[in-house]
Length: 409
Ligand SMILES: Cc1cc2nc3c(=O)[nH]c(=O)nc-3n(C[C@H](O)[C@H](O)[C@H](O)COP(=O)(O)O)c2cc1C
Ligand code: SF4
Ligand code: SF4
Image 1 (spheres, rainbow, N blue to C red):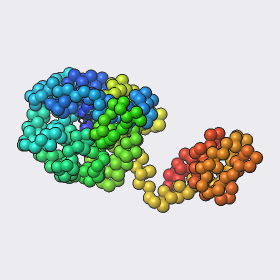
Image 2: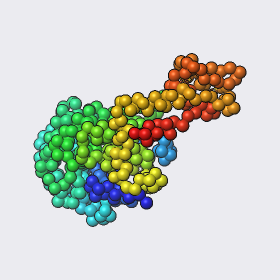
Image 3: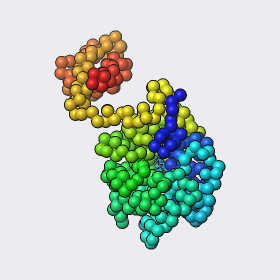
Image 4: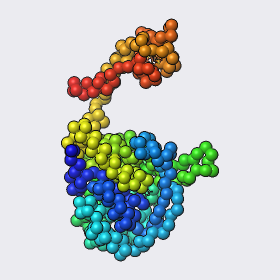
């Protein structure tokens, strides 16, 4: 069995259940602990509870690991039962007493609305840090991600300055407790915000993709979701992978806990292979519950076993050589595949003469004669036709060809 231990913060696995209804108060944190993640982030207190969920196309897509997007700008928001720091600290103590001791508890500090309201919120955040450290928080999480900060930032504050000053402030107040700085991916330059957090002493950075959105069914009056911050989805995965890989290749060397749109094990694998140490699970925890998270972790482990990855260090950053291949090598690899496309002939036995290949060829590289397709000298090897052929009559060993370039290297 693959070893999922994540050494950055001594976690049993790299999964962190993100601040959300699934982590609101001690009861929900303890409920979420049933999936045995590496850590759970206790949600901020006193800022409302609840919050519903809208899935497109539907929650089934999530269970099948298909593309899906999500909005939590729906449902009723009710007052939080925990309204004071003292009560919040009691929740922390209760969790520490009851939760398996090998699951870490990250505790949220502050809320963006404190900043928006003004007043001496800095003193209040420092007080929270001191009290929460005494209550037993294993780490603090500062939220500069969406939805909150997406709404607050750029209206009244310089985002990067806010990241810097708050990180520095909490770090200085309680130097013994790690500070996890959760950051937005959209509406700012994620690399710049990570650099500010690192320079300010962050223990880890968490680029997390959720964004402002506006979705409606064509019969728009029936749409549950409403415009605003709180949209997310699996389509974020290429963006977050890029964000993490770019950070790693440009010198961000502290632990990363990326998140956003991780609804199945493969998205989590990609984030870690792009260089993240940990992965946050938000929507999947809320909408799929502990069962979906358990399954995700199990499948993640199974994939590692089947693909010969013994542990997280072996997996972490394994795709960075793909990310950072130099231009000449990338071109050579692409040209090798192009040459294979150009040379490949149509399998005359299986071709059904449907004409799809001709329809997508923009270079007069293929024609149909006598209900069979034939490649012509004008073919440039772009590969369009290979992707649309319904019978596999146009095919090359794409994976083998692309991999062989790395093998030669
Ligand atoms: C219903 C819901 C409520 C959330 N509430 C908060 C919150 O109060 N504070 C916060 O920092 N993040 C909140 N988030 C964001 C998550 O902590 C996490 O960063 C995000 O959901 C990760 O993306 P994913 O949902 O695509 O996995 C919430 C997410 C959801 C789905
Ligand atoms: S590979 Fe491109 S150029 Fe060649 S036949 Fe197919 S679509 Fe046309
Ligand atoms: S798409 Fe495939 S099956 Fe259809 S005509 Fe072209 S080669 Fe033949």
